[in-house]
Length: 192
Image (cartoon, rainbow, N blue to C red; front, top):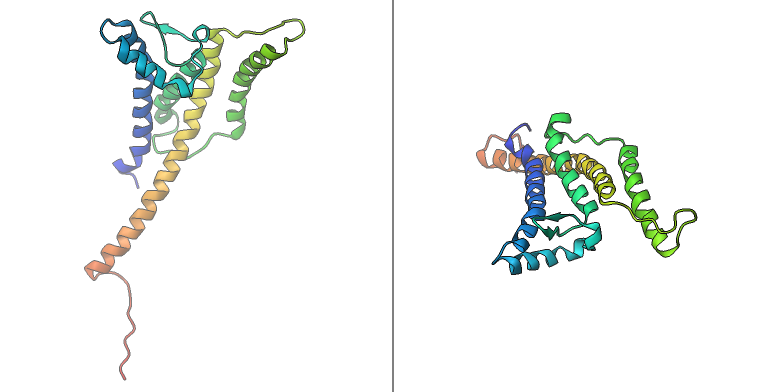
């Protein structure tokens, strides 16, 4: 199973990420451009279920707020970087997963940064009070997490796809062998 079809999960995943990450820049461009502000604003609000969209925790492009926060820009950008690097590191069709501790390890920085910020907002911490992360730190922790997310997502998608293609191939092979009369199916005949 070395044909084009085994590369489909990688290309679909990567092209979807490219389109999504580009949309993060197209939306503020539309919002900042005369005559397209309404379209940009509508698209901006479509991203609301994915992100809190707090202005102070967001980057701005073309003079308008991006539709997701700095941490989410890092996560989605990191996912794209991980997807682009994947074939060079593992091979496009790889189903090999990294050890789980790597995935967990990349959650620690994002968990500490976001978790301490969340908790200190409700219960000010001794010595530091209310902790507010910075957008560069949010971006960095998101990038780290996003890169590793793709290094897990792609092998999982490849495994599911390769299993599907193998099953489909065995079913199609059995059907075509029966139809062509060249199959190895034996039929018992009895004469009375």
